[in-house]
Length: 137
Image (tube, rainbow, N blue to C red):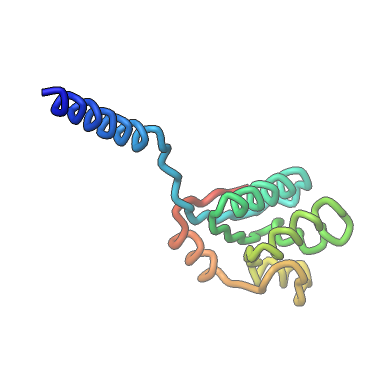
């Protein structure tokens, strides 16, 4: 009788601790894919978009950026703004991709962008379709 009671107590402790251990572990969120469309040339807006992109990459997410309209001016902004260059370089060094609308770049006579890759409307469409979250700035 005493052995059965001890066995029952041990079994209860093991079972209870097993349940507690499982419930105390918080589920880790899965990385996601984020597409960012930057169509502004406002320094603060673009800088904050790049900061968010870098933060998201540090959280394990995949981030792609498409520059559209005035957004393609990021290429010239990094030449005059040290903080902007730092954020853009950090993003690119961490495997980020920055695409630039080819038509928008041509209209600004920038045929050889340094920060972004010459891209098309089809690339923008693909970014929208493949990413779970799409943000605009």
